[in-house]
Length: 205
Figure: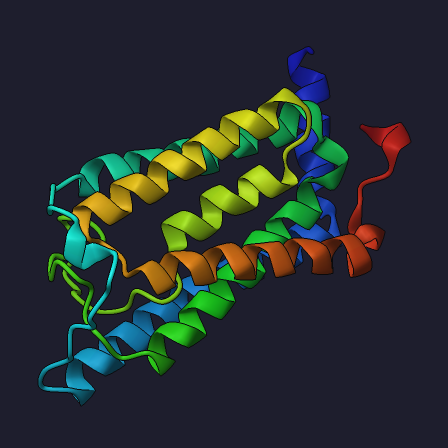
């Protein structure tokens, strides 16, 4: 594809209602997450750790950097995949990821407990609270659900590796991971049922 065609595609995407809604939802989710985490840090002097029958039988191996890298692989890789292979549905994908971000941003404020290893999801994360549901798992599993063909297996592998890294790092409780998988599946089904109208016109892409 030449540069002119790519610019036309990007312009069409930016002008689409679905893309604009998706960007707004993603921004709202990030804001909700930040504000709720900040609120919890001031509202509670200390937050509890939760017992976890699976984590209690695992050694702690600090792989938070790797789990962040695989999150980046999932998100950036899926964006590239969608742009090249499923461009007409890209606005819908933005909306679905945005819905997950908003849901996570709200639920973090409703589930005040500390992450298992007390380091935060990333070493650079100044906050040590806010884990439900797992954003790493949700993003990578949603990418798996939305991808097609052989790419589906690639994102499934990324999702499984991410989950293993999160468990070994004790960056999330088991319930955080399971909930993220369930929420991602429900959000994907919602998109299949109600968001097809935001698909880009095929003749223009």
